[in-house]
Image (tube, rainbow, N blue to C red; front, side, top):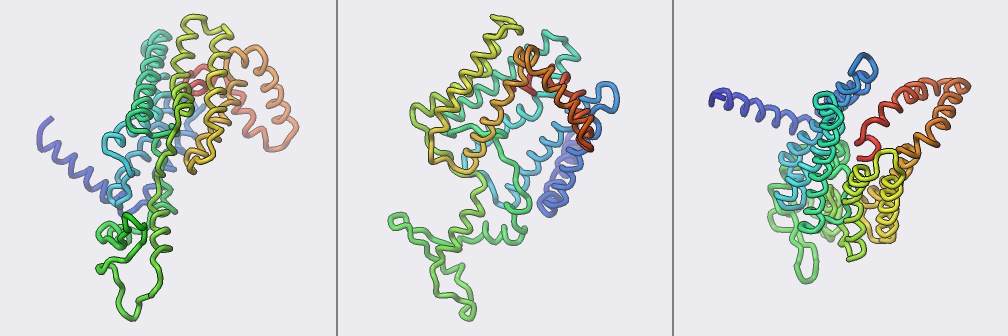
Amino acid sequence: MSKPYLDKLFRLYERYQQYVTQNPAATAKLESTVRTLSYLIAGRFADSHALSELVYSASNLLVLLNDGILRRGLCRNLPMSLSQQRLLTWLSVLEYVEVFTEMGASKIWGEGGRWLVIILIQIAKAILRILLLFWYKSGIQTSPPIIPLDRDSDLCTREEDREECGNDKFFVGQRTGRVIRTLNSTPSMHARVWGSPEKDWMSMQVKQDLHPSPTPLGLQETIAETVYIGRPLVHLLCLGVCGRRSWKPWFISGILELTSFSLLNEMKTLNRRERAEMRRRAFLLLYYLLRSPFYDRYAETKILVLLRFLADYIPGVGLIARPLMEYLPIWQKIYFYNWG
């Protein structure tokens, strides 16, 4: 690729960065539009589910890219090392594209290629999470690894951010923890307030706490999180040994996930993100009702009868229930939908 072409692409990217930094609300609307488009495409024509998943993955990657630009441009960088940020970014990318990658591998290489891609992605995710857990002490792993910015509440105006980044408004004593205004940030005499800046300092800290520090894990909690990280690999190994129709992979995976959840749920000092992650894991335990072989032998008939009854006898519910009945068989065939 010629150098002038690379320079042109670089200038174009710089202009895009400038636009995203200056227009976070418009950027959020663009992301929402792309995501809505993925919902509208699904079921419209042959292979529409793969195209819909491609657009949905692209929308998530667009959010990840724009959030990175906004954090750099508005001085909202994650409070961690650059290498840890890169690991989290790669882990986020894998989670965003795994479903489409599975669909594409199935189309191109067949069932064998599909399972090979599934195994490789799960191994890569497990390695990244183990590094984050043991090397960077990242605590309970959340999904997605990098929480998207809330453009309304987490970001302030560009001018305010530049002022916050350019000036050191407060000094915090290392021994006493006392907060004192610096001379550079002292207001004019007529606007001066002779009060403690503690409240201002605390509000600024809350505002900048977009990625709270992880709760330290003890030995028991570290083992529990390791079990949770390794559970997908154990499940895949059991599938290879026992077969897809066997109950053993379903039981072993469920026991590992329940054990991990029970041990981690005993912690009382989790931060807001970690509590949300534990609620998410509790909800995902219900997925075992929709996972084979339990779904094939017990749940499928009952769920379809219930959805059909709701669609036929409750006005308006059919708009949701009938597409859901059509989508359930497709959802069942995708590993990363129900086991990822």
